[in-house]
Image 1 (cartoon, rainbow, N blue to C red):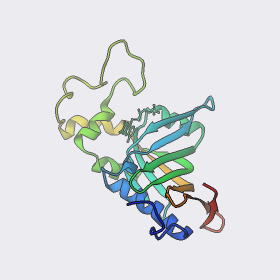
Image 2: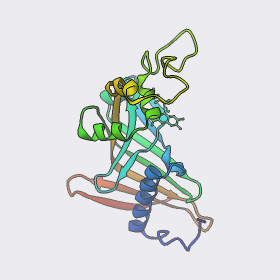
Image 3: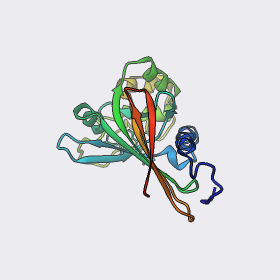
Image 4: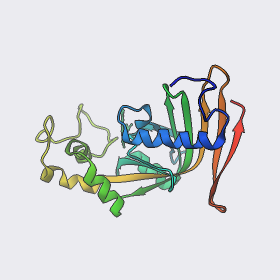
Length: 208
Ligand SMILES: Cc1cc2nc3c(=O)[nH]c(=O)nc-3n(C[C@H](O)[C@H](O)[C@H](O)COP(=O)(O)O)c2cc1C
């Protein structure tokens, strides 16, 4: 894709919003998309921002939700317990689109949706949640946190089953999408905001 007047969404807010969601949904399904690994920011209890890369597992336009998987013991989970504000940033160099999303995060560990996310995780993916002590713990020696018994090989299902206790999903309820499209003919920037009362998106062009 190249920047230019030929892009149908260039001067169209509705099409720009649709393109934003198309890129997010593709990012959740396509491991090669740069939107597969956005930056997710939370706010620590000391009010400082904290960012990390996460794999975008699901994007749903109708429910305005993005899903990520996380260890329940991770600091981002504690952050969301203090403040549910989240911000998600991604850039697709080929599409020339930056998306800056914001909304509220929710940690879910016991719902059917979390069970389904666990079921669809690979054995290697599930193994990450066996780490002990908890992710982010200070240790005296370099370690993966995994028992040497399961390190360096594909684990069996029964070996990763206990890791389910540490697994959670982060659901980000998106309330704002800031769209930036880079084009040599002139960039375009727009803000899409969810109106919870009217249950609809409002949109507004911004100066890039
Ligand atoms: C490519 C890539 C993908 C990652 N995917 C995830 C993920 O899906 N979930 C996750 O919790 N951490 C993921 N991480 C690790 C996080 O960036 C981070 O280091 C870790 O979750 C600890 O963050 P926290 O202490 O802020 O909770 C990923 C890192 C990289 C580099």
